[in-house]
Every structure is written in C-alpha cells, then in structure tokens.
Image 1 (cartoon, rainbow, N blue to C red):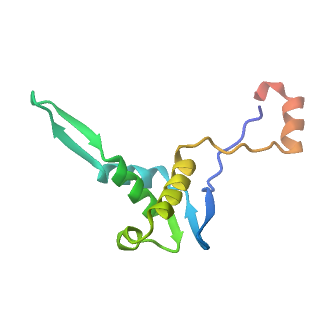
Image 2 (cartoon, rainbow, N blue to C red):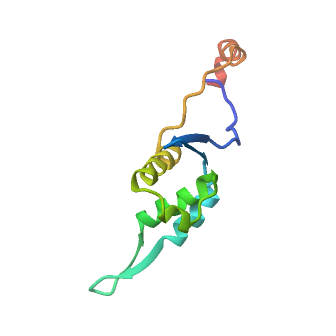
Length: 121
C-alpha cells in the first residue's frame, strides 16, 4: 500500500427525514473530547472508591446537537422532535463516528508508484 496522508476533510452527510434535509458533519477529536468531559461524572461506590462514568444518552444527544449544521438544532428544538426522527439522527451520528472509515480507491498514480517502489509498502 502506498504511503499517503490523512485527509483533513471531515465527513458530511445529508439525511432526509420526513421531507426535511439535515446536514450533519463529523466532529473533530477535540470537539468529541469536550463533549465526553461534559458527560462524565465521578461516582463513589459503597466502599468509597471513585470511578468515572459516562452518561451515554447525554453523550449522543450532545453529539447530535454539535453535528447538525443545517438546520441548527438546540436542545429545545431537539426535545420537540418525534422520537423516530431523533433516532435517525442518532443513527447517522453513530455511523459517522463509530463506524468503519469509508474505503477510498487508489488513483492510477498511487498504484504505479507502489508497483515501481515496493519499499513504500
């Protein structure tokens, strides 16, 4: 495989739900980390040990709010949406952030370079 660089481009998807297009964008790792911090609480168990726990429901909701570019959602607007609409937005955010990286095809130039110089594998 030829060496390459990671694209700084973020995944963007348009999801049509009930006739409305929602433009969603992938979060940066910094944005994701900030949201995780907001959703993390320290709990003490019965024997006095502290452990960090993440509220995954809150995590996903905050991710949807951050990812939805157009129309821009607020917590108030999202709380008024039908459950199945929110589930579709949740599904899209999950696929964008926790799914496999989309496959990219090599260009003819990359294939020729790899064939000519197998040391770059």
